[in-house]
Image 1: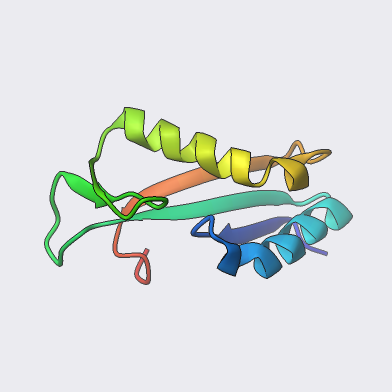
Image 2: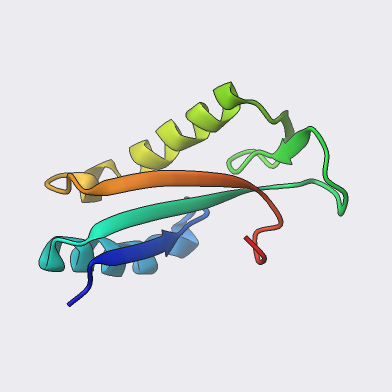
Length: 99
């Protein structure tokens, strides 16, 4: 039925119910799961800094930081990722509700 599933997350507890559904559907239908997290900008303007999703502090936007965030997202959902091989973790810098 489903071939692709998009799960947008902040990696916080508020996303747990959506995570449960997304992972369950991905496993049930052998669908590709896209785990998506937006690195929000600290101001209205675009710049070199994003807001850290765990601390709320301003962090310099770099590939190293993106890799760190992806690793944290994977760690957050490690239990639900067991047995699921067809997934990708994507990040974007921007305004979360428009990305």
